Length: 311
Image 1 (cartoon, rainbow, N blue to C red):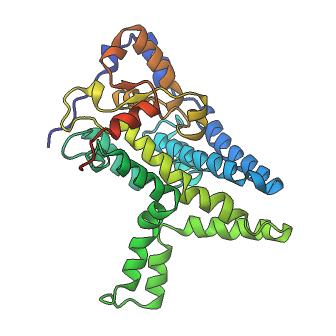
Image 2 (cartoon, rainbow, N blue to C red; image 1 turned 180 degrees about the vertical axis):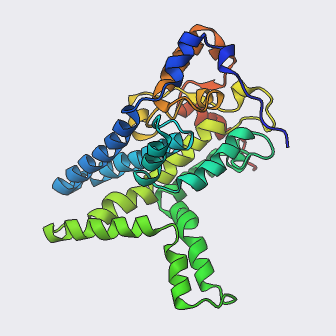
Image 3 (cartoon, rainbow, N blue to C red; image 1 turned 90 degrees about the vertical axis):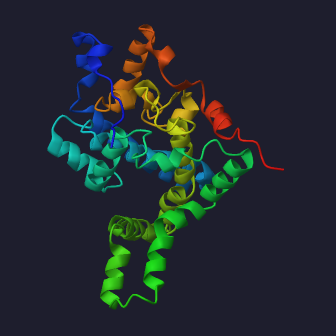
């Protein structure tokens, strides 16, 4: 299996330029995790005080749920904290979790980016698609169908399979594996909020964002990163796309600099908070002209849905 071509930092940066980019802060990673949780708590408090703001809170919280996943992704690269034990603790215990399994999978994506062996190739291979197909996918995301299909349907299919003769305890174990945080978080949150009349808070302000806005922006992020990138692309500057994001997009769609995805694939151990600086340096050196970039998320979606519909 041929690995994807890679670049060397020394090809683009002098040592005094590269050192600050590669440096991992002892406080920025923990601060970003704290920021994500504080935003979630603030949006939840807003919605509980003024229920009319629940739709806005769902969008804000769903974006920070993605933000926590992005920070776990940084931890998978050892980029969240210079102390690797603390890096893994932060990335596994204070984010969605599953860091070790995710790291193995994700580093395979980097090793074989856009090659036949890339485990994420299926996410980008179907594009471009028709606008109608893209609309259907977004509707499925926002109505919870994608969440059900990915998180719950395979589990219930296994439990209902008449060919399996599992004891009740085994079935419960099957149900809880990988989901204990979900149920523990639900139990604790409901226990804390219910006495104050907010028994609904966990359902409306955690599960609903996770089942609707989070899948939708995850899909859009995946499209922006790799859709319409050629399979077996030989140029390491074009394995992934960097997309310019405005303030609202960074708040609700692309938190924590995830839009600098080409730079991330070029230098995968650079912390996310240093990617904008890497982008500026590469632009100043004229390298950006050879990189795969897009001026906006709207432009990327236009490219990804450019396939003509069959009459």
